[in-house]
Amino acid sequence: MNPVEGSEDPRLEHLVDGIVRLAAGELDARIEPSERGDAIDAVITGVNLLAEELGHIYTELEERVAARTAMLRRTQVELEHMAKTDALTGLANRTLLNERIQEAIRTGTESGGAPAVLVLDLDSFKAINDTLGHSAGDAVLIEVSRRLRSVVRASDTVARLGGDEFAALITGAGADEVMLIAHRVWEALQESIDIGTETVWTTASIGICLRDGGYSAEEMMRDADIAMYQAKAQGRNKVQLFHPDMLNAVQERSRITAELRTAAESGQLALLYQPVIELASGKVTGVEALIRWHHPVHGTIMPDNFISIAEETGLILELGRWVLHEGIAQLGRWKQQAPQLTDFRLHINLSAAELLRSDLVGDVTGTLTRNEIEPSRLVLEITESVLMSRRTVEQQVLEKLRAVGVGLQIDDFGTGYSSISYLRDLPADTVKVDRSLINNLETDSRQQKFVAAILQLISAAELEAIVEGIETAGQAASLQAMGCLYGQGYYYGRPVPAAEILARISHSEPQM
Ligand code: C2E
Ligand code: CA
Ligand code: CA
Image (cartoon, rainbow, N blue to C red; front, side, top):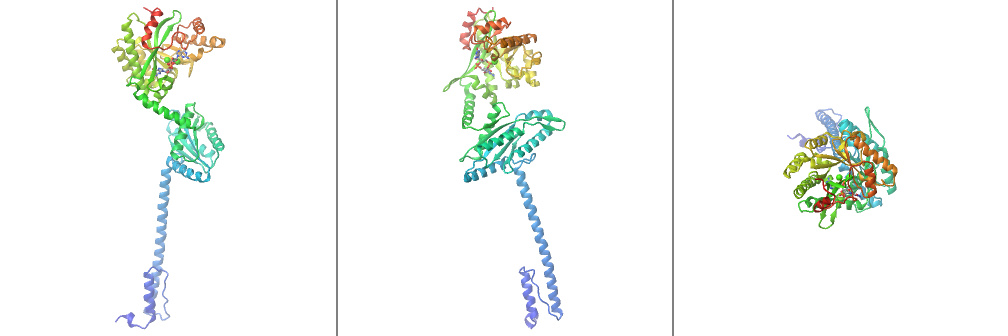
Protein backbone atom coordinates (compact mmCIF):
# COMPACT_ATOMS: atom_id res chain seq x y z
CA MET A 1 0.00 0.00 0.00
CA ASN A 2 1.23 3.48 -0.82
CA PRO A 3 1.72 5.12 2.60
CA VAL A 4 1.31 8.66 1.26
CA GLU A 5 -1.88 8.22 -0.64
CA GLY A 6 -3.40 5.85 1.86
CA SER A 7 -2.80 8.02 4.88
CA GLU A 8 -4.94 10.74 6.33
CA ASP A 9 -1.89 12.29 8.16
CA PRO A 10 -1.45 15.89 6.87
CA ARG A 11 2.21 15.82 7.90
CA LEU A 12 2.98 13.53 5.05
CA GLU A 13 1.67 16.15 2.62
CA HIS A 14 3.89 18.82 4.34
CA LEU A 15 6.78 16.43 4.15
CA VAL A 16 6.33 15.92 0.38
CA ASP A 17 5.89 19.68 -0.10
CA GLY A 18 9.02 20.39 1.91
CA ILE A 19 11.10 17.85 -0.01
CA VAL A 20 9.86 19.30 -3.33
CA ARG A 21 10.86 22.85 -2.19
CA LEU A 22 14.24 21.65 -1.02
CA ALA A 23 14.77 19.81 -4.28
CA ALA A 24 13.90 23.04 -6.10
CA GLY A 25 16.80 24.75 -4.26
CA GLU A 26 14.89 26.46 -1.47
CA LEU A 27 17.46 25.38 1.07
CA ASP A 28 15.95 27.40 3.92
CA ALA A 29 12.61 25.56 3.60
CA ARG A 30 11.82 23.67 6.80
CA ILE A 31 9.01 21.22 7.65
CA GLU A 32 7.20 21.74 10.91
CA PRO A 33 7.24 18.47 12.97
CA SER A 34 4.29 17.67 15.21
CA GLU A 35 4.40 17.06 18.90
CA ARG A 36 3.73 13.36 18.42
CA GLY A 37 7.35 12.49 18.02
CA ASP A 38 6.63 9.38 16.03
CA ALA A 39 8.41 7.88 13.07
CA ILE A 40 7.06 10.52 10.65
CA ASP A 41 8.37 13.32 12.92
CA ALA A 42 11.68 11.52 13.02
CA VAL A 43 11.79 11.57 9.19
CA ILE A 44 10.76 15.25 9.21
CA THR A 45 13.54 16.13 11.66
CA GLY A 46 15.99 14.08 9.59
CA VAL A 47 15.00 15.95 6.40
CA ASN A 48 15.30 19.27 8.24
CA LEU A 49 18.81 18.35 9.42
CA LEU A 50 19.76 17.29 5.92
CA ALA A 51 18.41 20.59 4.61
CA GLU A 52 20.47 22.45 7.23
CA GLU A 53 23.59 20.56 6.21
CA LEU A 54 22.90 21.12 2.53
CA GLY A 55 22.53 24.82 3.28
CA HIS A 56 25.96 24.91 4.94
CA ILE A 57 27.60 23.01 2.10
CA TYR A 58 25.97 25.27 -0.42
CA THR A 59 27.07 28.46 1.34
CA GLU A 60 30.58 27.13 1.63
CA LEU A 61 30.59 26.27 -2.05
CA GLU A 62 29.33 29.67 -2.94
CA GLU A 63 32.07 31.29 -0.85
CA ARG A 64 34.69 29.14 -2.48
CA VAL A 65 33.47 29.97 -5.96
CA ALA A 66 33.45 33.65 -5.03
CA ALA A 67 37.02 33.40 -3.71
CA ARG A 68 38.19 31.59 -6.85
CA THR A 69 36.49 34.13 -9.08
CA ALA A 70 38.12 36.98 -7.18
CA MET A 71 41.50 35.29 -7.51
CA LEU A 72 41.04 34.82 -11.23
CA ARG A 73 40.00 38.42 -11.57
CA ARG A 74 43.07 39.56 -9.62
CA THR A 75 45.37 37.46 -11.82
CA GLN A 76 43.70 38.88 -14.88
CA VAL A 77 44.19 42.42 -13.61
CA GLU A 78 47.80 41.61 -12.76
CA LEU A 79 48.39 40.15 -16.21
CA GLU A 80 46.80 43.17 -17.80
CA HIS A 81 48.93 45.40 -15.60
CA MET A 82 52.06 43.47 -16.56
CA ALA A 83 51.17 43.72 -20.22
CA LYS A 84 50.81 47.46 -19.87
CA THR A 85 53.58 48.44 -17.51
CA ASP A 86 57.33 48.44 -17.65
CA ALA A 87 58.72 45.79 -15.33
CA LEU A 88 61.82 47.75 -14.30
CA THR A 89 60.27 51.11 -13.45
CA GLY A 90 56.61 50.27 -12.98
CA LEU A 91 55.73 53.06 -15.40
CA ALA A 92 53.16 52.63 -18.14
CA ASN A 93 54.48 51.06 -21.31
CA ARG A 94 53.90 52.10 -24.90
CA THR A 95 50.61 50.18 -25.17
CA LEU A 96 49.06 51.77 -22.11
CA LEU A 97 50.36 55.21 -23.04
CA ASN A 98 48.83 54.81 -26.47
CA GLU A 99 45.46 53.91 -24.95
CA ARG A 100 45.61 56.86 -22.61
CA ILE A 101 46.50 59.25 -25.42
CA GLN A 102 43.57 57.98 -27.48
CA GLU A 103 41.29 58.45 -24.51
CA ALA A 104 42.69 61.93 -23.84
CA ILE A 105 42.16 62.90 -27.46
CA ARG A 106 38.53 61.72 -27.21
CA THR A 107 37.73 63.51 -23.98
CA GLY A 108 39.86 66.48 -25.01
CA THR A 109 37.76 66.91 -28.14
CA GLU A 110 34.63 66.96 -25.98
CA SER A 111 35.97 69.37 -23.38
CA GLY A 112 38.03 71.48 -25.80
CA GLY A 113 41.36 70.82 -24.03
CA ALA A 114 44.06 69.28 -26.21
CA PRO A 115 46.43 66.80 -24.56
CA ALA A 116 50.21 67.14 -24.88
CA VAL A 117 52.76 64.38 -25.37
CA LEU A 118 56.36 64.66 -24.22
CA VAL A 119 59.02 62.28 -25.48
CA LEU A 120 62.28 62.23 -23.60
CA ASP A 121 65.55 60.51 -24.41
CA LEU A 122 68.50 60.42 -22.02
CA ASP A 123 71.62 61.94 -23.54
CA SER A 124 74.45 59.93 -22.13
CA PHE A 125 72.84 56.75 -20.94
CA LYS A 126 74.85 54.40 -23.12
CA ALA A 127 78.07 55.68 -21.57
CA ILE A 128 76.73 54.96 -18.07
CA ASN A 129 75.72 51.45 -19.08
CA ASP A 130 79.06 50.85 -20.78
CA THR A 131 81.26 52.16 -18.01
CA LEU A 132 79.34 51.30 -14.83
CA GLY A 133 77.44 48.22 -15.94
CA HIS A 134 73.82 47.32 -16.46
CA SER A 135 72.69 47.30 -12.86
CA ALA A 136 73.93 50.87 -12.50
CA GLY A 137 72.07 51.64 -15.73
CA ASP A 138 68.91 50.13 -14.25
CA ALA A 139 69.32 52.21 -11.09
CA VAL A 140 69.58 55.35 -13.22
CA LEU A 141 66.41 54.44 -15.13
CA ILE A 142 64.53 53.86 -11.89
CA GLU A 143 65.69 57.18 -10.45
CA VAL A 144 64.81 58.99 -13.65
CA SER A 145 61.30 57.51 -13.62
CA ARG A 146 60.90 58.52 -9.98
CA ARG A 147 61.87 62.11 -10.83
CA LEU A 148 59.56 62.18 -13.82
CA ARG A 149 56.62 61.03 -11.70
CA SER A 150 57.42 63.61 -9.08
CA VAL A 151 57.20 66.58 -11.44
CA VAL A 152 54.02 65.75 -13.34
CA ARG A 153 50.54 65.65 -11.83
CA ALA A 154 49.01 62.42 -10.55
CA SER A 155 46.50 62.48 -13.40
CA ASP A 156 49.27 62.54 -16.03
CA THR A 157 50.70 59.32 -17.44
CA VAL A 158 54.43 58.69 -17.41
CA ALA A 159 55.66 55.85 -19.60
CA ARG A 160 58.90 54.12 -20.46
CA LEU A 161 59.00 53.43 -24.16
CA GLY A 162 62.04 51.19 -23.95
CA GLY A 163 65.77 51.63 -23.41
CA ASP A 164 66.39 55.13 -22.15
CA GLU A 165 63.34 56.62 -23.80
CA PHE A 166 60.45 57.93 -21.72
CA ALA A 167 57.21 59.74 -22.46
CA ALA A 168 54.54 61.65 -20.60
CA LEU A 169 50.95 62.44 -21.42
CA ILE A 170 49.76 65.70 -19.97
CA THR A 171 46.06 66.42 -20.04
CA GLY A 172 43.93 69.41 -19.16
CA ALA A 173 46.84 71.86 -19.29
CA GLY A 174 47.21 74.94 -21.47
CA ALA A 175 50.22 75.46 -23.74
CA ASP A 176 52.06 77.58 -21.16
CA GLU A 177 51.52 75.05 -18.45
CA VAL A 178 52.75 72.24 -20.69
CA MET A 179 55.96 74.15 -21.41
CA LEU A 180 56.34 74.76 -17.69
CA ILE A 181 55.95 71.07 -16.92
CA ALA A 182 58.44 70.20 -19.68
CA HIS A 183 60.97 72.55 -18.14
CA ARG A 184 60.33 71.07 -14.71
CA VAL A 185 61.07 67.66 -16.22
CA TRP A 186 64.24 69.03 -17.79
CA GLU A 187 65.27 70.62 -14.50
CA ALA A 188 64.62 67.45 -12.52
CA LEU A 189 67.27 65.72 -14.60
CA GLN A 190 69.96 68.35 -14.17
CA GLU A 191 70.79 67.07 -10.72
CA SER A 192 73.32 64.28 -10.34
CA ILE A 193 72.26 60.75 -9.51
CA ASP A 194 74.06 58.75 -6.83
CA ILE A 195 74.48 55.04 -7.44
CA GLY A 196 76.36 53.39 -4.65
CA THR A 197 79.67 55.22 -4.51
CA GLU A 198 79.38 56.65 -8.01
CA THR A 199 77.78 59.91 -9.02
CA VAL A 200 76.47 60.24 -12.54
CA TRP A 201 74.82 62.92 -14.60
CA THR A 202 72.32 62.24 -17.26
CA THR A 203 70.58 65.03 -19.05
CA ALA A 204 67.70 64.56 -21.47
CA SER A 205 66.51 65.81 -24.82
CA ILE A 206 62.80 66.48 -24.72
CA GLY A 207 60.34 66.82 -27.59
CA ILE A 208 56.78 68.04 -27.15
CA CYS A 209 53.75 67.61 -29.36
CA LEU A 210 50.89 69.93 -28.48
CA ARG A 211 48.18 69.87 -31.11
CA ASP A 212 44.50 70.55 -31.35
CA GLY A 213 41.95 68.00 -32.57
CA GLY A 214 42.08 65.85 -35.64
CA TYR A 215 45.30 64.24 -34.52
CA SER A 216 45.78 60.53 -33.83
CA ALA A 217 47.80 59.09 -30.96
CA GLU A 218 50.35 57.78 -33.49
CA GLU A 219 50.76 61.20 -35.03
CA MET A 220 51.23 62.81 -31.62
CA MET A 221 53.93 60.28 -30.72
CA ARG A 222 55.63 60.67 -34.09
CA ASP A 223 55.74 64.45 -33.82
CA ALA A 224 56.95 64.48 -30.22
CA ASP A 225 59.66 62.08 -31.38
CA ILE A 226 60.65 64.35 -34.27
CA ALA A 227 60.87 67.30 -31.87
CA MET A 228 63.01 65.20 -29.52
CA TYR A 229 65.43 64.37 -32.35
CA GLN A 230 65.57 68.06 -33.18
CA ALA A 231 66.49 68.77 -29.53
CA LYS A 232 69.26 66.17 -29.83
CA ALA A 233 70.50 67.63 -33.09
CA GLN A 234 70.67 71.07 -31.50
CA GLY A 235 73.16 69.86 -28.95
CA ARG A 236 71.05 67.79 -26.54
CA ASN A 237 69.85 68.64 -23.05
CA LYS A 238 67.06 70.77 -24.52
CA VAL A 239 63.30 71.12 -24.66
CA GLN A 240 61.89 71.41 -28.17
CA LEU A 241 58.29 72.01 -29.20
CA PHE A 242 57.19 70.31 -32.43
CA HIS A 243 56.59 72.51 -35.44
CA PRO A 244 55.16 71.24 -38.79
CA ASP A 245 58.33 72.42 -40.58
CA MET A 246 60.20 69.70 -38.72
CA LEU A 247 58.03 67.04 -40.29
CA ASN A 248 58.77 68.49 -43.72
CA ALA A 249 62.48 68.38 -42.95
CA VAL A 250 62.22 64.73 -41.89
CA GLN A 251 60.35 63.88 -45.08
CA GLU A 252 62.96 65.78 -47.07
CA ARG A 253 65.69 63.78 -45.38
CA SER A 254 64.04 60.47 -46.17
CA ARG A 255 63.62 61.60 -49.79
CA ILE A 256 67.32 62.49 -49.95
CA THR A 257 68.21 59.14 -48.39
CA ALA A 258 66.19 57.22 -50.98
CA GLU A 259 67.67 59.19 -53.86
CA LEU A 260 71.20 59.09 -52.51
CA ARG A 261 70.99 55.31 -52.49
CA THR A 262 70.98 55.26 -56.28
CA ALA A 263 73.03 58.41 -56.89
CA ALA A 264 76.36 56.60 -57.28
CA GLU A 265 75.01 53.96 -59.68
CA SER A 266 73.30 56.55 -61.84
CA GLY A 267 76.47 58.60 -62.17
CA GLN A 268 75.20 61.60 -60.21
CA LEU A 269 78.23 61.80 -57.91
CA ALA A 270 81.34 63.68 -58.88
CA LEU A 271 84.57 64.72 -57.25
CA LEU A 272 86.06 68.19 -57.38
CA TYR A 273 89.67 68.73 -56.45
CA GLN A 274 91.05 71.63 -54.46
CA PRO A 275 94.78 72.35 -54.64
CA VAL A 276 97.00 72.03 -51.58
CA ILE A 277 99.75 74.64 -51.76
CA GLU A 278 103.29 74.92 -50.47
CA LEU A 279 103.03 78.49 -49.24
CA ALA A 280 106.64 79.59 -49.79
CA SER A 281 106.81 78.49 -53.43
CA GLY A 282 103.12 78.58 -54.36
CA LYS A 283 103.50 75.05 -55.75
CA VAL A 284 100.61 72.63 -55.85
CA THR A 285 101.71 69.65 -53.79
CA GLY A 286 98.45 67.77 -53.98
CA VAL A 287 94.68 68.03 -54.06
CA GLU A 288 91.78 67.32 -51.72
CA ALA A 289 88.87 65.41 -53.25
CA LEU A 290 85.51 66.98 -52.38
CA ILE A 291 82.29 65.27 -53.32
CA ARG A 292 79.38 66.84 -55.21
CA TRP A 293 75.96 65.40 -55.99
CA HIS A 294 74.56 66.46 -59.34
CA HIS A 295 70.88 65.89 -58.74
CA PRO A 296 68.73 65.66 -61.89
CA VAL A 297 66.06 67.96 -60.41
CA HIS A 298 67.69 69.95 -57.61
CA GLY A 299 70.99 70.68 -59.34
CA THR A 300 74.31 70.46 -57.51
CA ILE A 301 73.94 69.52 -53.86
CA MET A 302 76.86 70.34 -51.54
CA PRO A 303 78.24 67.69 -49.17
CA ASP A 304 77.12 69.58 -46.07
CA ASN A 305 73.55 68.80 -47.19
CA PHE A 306 73.94 65.06 -47.58
CA ILE A 307 77.07 63.73 -45.84
CA SER A 308 75.47 63.82 -42.39
CA ILE A 309 72.39 62.02 -43.75
CA ALA A 310 74.65 59.43 -45.36
CA GLU A 311 76.44 59.03 -42.03
CA GLU A 312 73.20 58.54 -40.12
CA THR A 313 71.84 55.99 -42.54
CA GLY A 314 75.04 54.05 -43.11
CA LEU A 315 75.05 55.04 -46.79
CA ILE A 316 78.37 56.72 -46.10
CA LEU A 317 80.11 53.35 -46.45
CA GLU A 318 78.90 52.99 -50.03
CA LEU A 319 79.63 56.63 -50.73
CA GLY A 320 83.09 56.51 -49.16
CA ARG A 321 83.98 53.43 -51.17
CA TRP A 322 82.99 55.25 -54.36
CA VAL A 323 85.07 58.33 -53.39
CA LEU A 324 88.10 56.18 -52.62
CA HIS A 325 87.91 54.23 -55.89
CA GLU A 326 87.16 57.26 -58.04
CA GLY A 327 89.79 59.47 -56.36
CA ILE A 328 92.58 56.91 -56.63
CA ALA A 329 91.62 56.07 -60.24
CA GLN A 330 91.88 59.77 -61.05
CA LEU A 331 95.27 59.94 -59.38
CA GLY A 332 96.28 57.05 -61.68
CA ARG A 333 95.11 59.01 -64.74
CA TRP A 334 97.06 62.09 -63.64
CA LYS A 335 100.10 59.91 -63.13
CA GLN A 336 99.86 58.69 -66.72
CA GLN A 337 99.25 62.17 -68.11
CA ALA A 338 102.05 63.75 -66.07
CA PRO A 339 104.58 61.11 -64.98
CA GLN A 340 106.86 63.87 -63.69
CA LEU A 341 104.49 64.49 -60.76
CA THR A 342 106.16 62.00 -58.47
CA ASP A 343 105.27 63.71 -55.23
CA PHE A 344 101.71 64.77 -55.99
CA ARG A 345 99.34 63.67 -53.22
CA LEU A 346 95.62 62.99 -53.10
CA HIS A 347 93.69 63.83 -49.93
CA ILE A 348 90.46 61.97 -49.25
CA ASN A 349 88.00 62.71 -46.44
CA LEU A 350 87.01 59.72 -44.35
CA SER A 351 83.98 59.68 -42.08
CA ALA A 352 84.21 58.12 -38.64
CA ALA A 353 81.99 55.19 -39.60
CA GLU A 354 84.30 54.24 -42.45
CA LEU A 355 87.04 53.40 -39.97
CA LEU A 356 84.78 50.61 -38.73
CA ARG A 357 84.54 49.07 -42.19
CA SER A 358 86.22 45.71 -41.78
CA ASP A 359 87.57 45.77 -45.33
CA LEU A 360 88.83 49.37 -45.25
CA VAL A 361 92.58 48.67 -45.08
CA GLY A 362 92.32 45.93 -47.73
CA ASP A 363 90.23 48.15 -49.97
CA VAL A 364 92.70 51.03 -49.65
CA THR A 365 95.78 48.92 -50.39
CA GLY A 366 94.01 46.93 -53.12
CA THR A 367 92.83 50.05 -54.92
CA LEU A 368 96.28 51.63 -54.68
CA THR A 369 97.92 48.51 -56.09
CA ARG A 370 95.42 48.20 -58.95
CA ASN A 371 96.17 51.78 -59.97
CA GLU A 372 99.92 51.44 -59.36
CA ILE A 373 100.00 54.22 -56.81
CA GLU A 374 102.38 54.27 -53.86
CA PRO A 375 100.59 54.41 -50.48
CA SER A 376 102.48 57.56 -49.47
CA ARG A 377 100.65 59.48 -52.19
CA LEU A 378 97.32 59.01 -50.45
CA VAL A 379 96.41 61.11 -47.42
CA LEU A 380 93.28 60.26 -45.46
CA GLU A 381 91.70 63.21 -43.69
CA ILE A 382 89.92 62.33 -40.48
CA THR A 383 88.22 64.82 -38.17
CA GLU A 384 89.82 65.26 -34.82
CA SER A 385 86.80 64.04 -32.88
CA VAL A 386 87.40 60.53 -34.27
CA LEU A 387 91.03 60.57 -33.25
CA MET A 388 90.18 61.88 -29.81
CA SER A 389 87.61 59.20 -29.13
CA ARG A 390 90.54 56.80 -28.79
CA ARG A 391 88.44 53.71 -29.21
CA THR A 392 90.64 50.74 -29.79
CA VAL A 393 88.94 49.59 -32.98
CA GLU A 394 89.54 52.90 -34.70
CA GLN A 395 93.04 53.19 -33.27
CA GLN A 396 93.94 49.80 -34.68
CA VAL A 397 92.63 50.66 -38.14
CA LEU A 398 94.60 53.92 -38.08
CA GLU A 399 97.75 52.09 -37.00
CA LYS A 400 97.29 49.61 -39.83
CA LEU A 401 96.78 52.35 -42.39
CA ARG A 402 99.91 54.04 -41.15
CA ALA A 403 101.79 50.76 -41.29
CA VAL A 404 100.99 50.35 -44.97
CA GLY A 405 102.38 53.85 -45.58
CA VAL A 406 99.23 55.90 -46.10
CA GLY A 407 99.35 59.48 -44.77
CA LEU A 408 96.92 60.41 -42.00
CA GLN A 409 95.78 63.94 -41.43
CA ILE A 410 93.74 65.39 -38.59
CA ASP A 411 91.02 67.50 -40.21
CA ASP A 412 89.12 70.47 -38.80
CA PHE A 413 91.68 70.88 -36.02
CA GLY A 414 90.56 73.42 -33.44
CA THR A 415 86.81 72.94 -33.84
CA GLY A 416 86.09 70.20 -31.42
CA TYR A 417 87.76 68.31 -28.70
CA SER A 418 91.30 69.60 -29.26
CA SER A 419 92.92 68.23 -26.23
CA ILE A 420 96.41 69.50 -26.69
CA SER A 421 98.08 66.71 -24.75
CA TYR A 422 96.68 64.11 -27.12
CA LEU A 423 98.23 65.79 -30.11
CA ARG A 424 101.60 64.28 -29.30
CA ASP A 425 100.65 60.64 -29.49
CA LEU A 426 98.01 60.77 -32.19
CA PRO A 427 98.51 58.31 -35.04
CA ALA A 428 98.76 61.09 -37.63
CA ASP A 429 101.47 62.95 -39.49
CA THR A 430 99.77 66.18 -40.53
CA VAL A 431 97.22 68.48 -38.94
CA LYS A 432 94.81 70.66 -40.88
CA VAL A 433 93.90 73.77 -38.90
CA ASP A 434 90.23 74.62 -39.37
CA ARG A 435 89.32 77.69 -41.36
CA SER A 436 87.27 79.15 -38.49
CA LEU A 437 90.55 79.84 -36.68
CA ILE A 438 91.87 82.21 -39.33
CA ASN A 439 88.70 84.25 -39.87
CA ASN A 440 89.97 87.46 -38.29
CA LEU A 441 93.63 86.80 -38.75
CA GLU A 442 94.38 90.11 -40.46
CA THR A 443 92.55 92.37 -38.02
CA ASP A 444 92.74 90.62 -34.68
CA SER A 445 96.20 90.49 -33.15
CA ARG A 446 95.05 88.10 -30.42
CA GLN A 447 93.88 85.71 -33.12
CA GLN A 448 97.31 85.96 -34.71
CA LYS A 449 99.00 85.03 -31.47
CA PHE A 450 96.57 82.19 -30.97
CA VAL A 451 97.13 80.70 -34.43
CA ALA A 452 100.89 81.13 -34.06
CA ALA A 453 100.73 79.24 -30.76
CA ILE A 454 98.72 76.45 -32.34
CA LEU A 455 101.20 76.14 -35.19
CA GLN A 456 104.05 75.95 -32.70
CA LEU A 457 102.22 73.30 -30.78
CA ILE A 458 101.70 71.20 -33.89
CA SER A 459 105.35 71.47 -34.75
CA ALA A 460 106.34 70.64 -31.16
CA ALA A 461 104.31 67.46 -31.54
CA GLU A 462 106.46 66.75 -34.61
CA LEU A 463 103.50 67.02 -36.93
CA GLU A 464 103.21 69.09 -40.08
CA ALA A 465 100.60 71.86 -40.20
CA ILE A 466 98.41 72.91 -43.06
CA VAL A 467 95.89 75.73 -42.77
CA GLU A 468 92.62 75.62 -44.71
CA GLY A 469 90.25 78.35 -45.77
CA ILE A 470 92.85 80.92 -46.85
CA GLU A 471 90.85 83.50 -48.79
CA THR A 472 93.07 86.56 -48.91
CA ALA A 473 96.66 87.51 -49.66
CA GLY A 474 96.83 89.01 -46.16
CA GLN A 475 95.96 85.72 -44.50
CA ALA A 476 98.47 83.92 -46.69
CA ALA A 477 101.22 86.38 -45.77
CA SER A 478 100.43 86.21 -42.04
CA LEU A 479 100.51 82.43 -42.04
CA GLN A 480 103.74 82.31 -43.98
CA ALA A 481 105.28 84.76 -41.53
CA MET A 482 104.27 82.38 -38.72
CA GLY A 483 106.18 79.61 -40.42
CA CYS A 484 103.21 77.68 -41.73
CA LEU A 485 104.38 75.57 -44.68
CA TYR A 486 101.18 74.44 -46.36
CA GLY A 487 97.80 75.96 -47.07
CA GLN A 488 94.57 75.58 -48.93
CA GLY A 489 91.77 77.99 -49.75
CA TYR A 490 89.88 80.00 -52.31
CA TYR A 491 92.82 82.41 -52.50
CA TYR A 492 94.91 79.64 -54.07
CA GLY A 493 92.17 77.82 -55.84
CA ARG A 494 88.60 76.66 -55.48
CA PRO A 495 87.63 73.03 -55.85
CA VAL A 496 87.59 72.30 -59.61
CA PRO A 497 86.94 69.28 -61.88
CA ALA A 498 89.84 66.89 -62.45
CA ALA A 499 90.42 68.17 -65.98
CA GLU A 500 91.49 71.59 -64.69
CA ILE A 501 94.05 70.37 -62.20
CA LEU A 502 97.00 69.67 -64.52
CA ALA A 503 96.72 73.12 -66.08
CA ARG A 504 96.69 74.61 -62.59
CA ILE A 505 99.83 72.66 -61.68
CA SER A 506 101.77 73.74 -64.75
CA HIS A 507 101.08 77.37 -63.76
CA SER A 508 102.62 76.72 -60.38
CA GLU A 509 105.82 75.07 -61.67
CA PRO A 510 105.24 71.46 -60.68
CA GLN A 511 107.70 69.60 -58.54
CA MET A 512 109.77 67.32 -60.70
P1 C2E B 1 86.29 69.79 -45.22
O1 C2E B 1 86.95 68.47 -45.28
O2 C2E B 1 86.69 70.68 -44.09
O3 C2E B 1 86.54 70.47 -46.61
C1 C2E B 1 86.80 71.84 -46.78
C2 C2E B 1 85.57 72.59 -47.16
O4 C2E B 1 85.86 73.96 -47.19
C3 C2E B 1 85.07 72.25 -48.57
O5 C2E B 1 83.67 72.40 -48.58
C4 C2E B 1 85.73 73.34 -49.40
O6 C2E B 1 85.06 73.58 -50.62
C5 C2E B 1 85.61 74.50 -48.47
N1 C2E B 1 86.65 75.51 -48.70
C6 C2E B 1 87.87 75.35 -49.25
N2 C2E B 1 88.53 76.51 -49.28
C7 C2E B 1 87.73 77.44 -48.71
C8 C2E B 1 87.86 78.84 -48.44
O7 C2E B 1 88.84 79.48 -48.73
N3 C2E B 1 86.82 79.44 -47.83
C9 C2E B 1 85.68 78.77 -47.51
N4 C2E B 1 84.71 79.44 -46.93
N5 C2E B 1 85.53 77.45 -47.74
C10 C2E B 1 86.54 76.79 -48.33
P2 C2E B 1 82.73 71.33 -49.23
O8 C2E B 1 83.34 70.83 -50.51
O9 C2E B 1 81.38 71.90 -49.26
O10 C2E B 1 82.79 70.15 -48.21
C11 C2E B 1 82.24 70.27 -46.94
C12 C2E B 1 82.58 69.12 -46.07
O11 C2E B 1 81.96 67.92 -46.54
C13 C2E B 1 84.05 68.79 -46.02
O12 C2E B 1 84.69 69.64 -45.13
C14 C2E B 1 84.02 67.37 -45.56
O13 C2E B 1 83.88 67.31 -44.18
C15 C2E B 1 82.76 66.85 -46.20
N6 C2E B 1 83.13 66.09 -47.41
C16 C2E B 1 83.36 66.53 -48.66
N7 C2E B 1 83.65 65.51 -49.49
C17 C2E B 1 83.64 64.39 -48.72
C18 C2E B 1 83.88 63.00 -48.99
O14 C2E B 1 84.20 62.59 -50.10
N8 C2E B 1 83.74 62.14 -47.95
C19 C2E B 1 83.41 62.57 -46.71
N9 C2E B 1 83.31 61.66 -45.74
N10 C2E B 1 83.19 63.85 -46.43
C20 C2E B 1 83.30 64.76 -47.42
CA1 CA C 1 88.98 67.80 -45.37
CA1 CA D 1 87.99 71.19 -42.61
